[in-house]
Length: 153
Image (cartoon, rainbow, N blue to C red; front, side, top):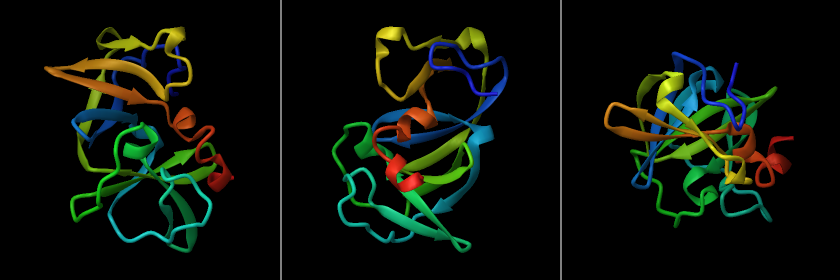
């Protein structure tokens, strides 16, 4: 069960960690379906720049979000190191374009700091300390809300 916006992740929950810009992020591993190497996407006219297109995943059209652009960072060229994290958002399959996948970590409740209510619409569940790393735990539902739901419907 995923943590709510104002709750720390549950004890020992596994998280996939990945790189976007100079930051390290994490996503609840139970939402991750698979990790794919970057392949060209089919762009759709009129979509936000953070939604570079869709991909064919074994006969299913999957919208792909550029996490870098969604989080307000400057875009970059995709290369052979870019990765698409295929995740499940409710009953929908979505893709997250990131720069690199790192590892899977366990985050204990004591190591996670919930986002204060003043965090507003930020797509973040918590900020976690794992060893000497600071990980921003993303909320997949909020990441897509008001930005990608028109493609993931």
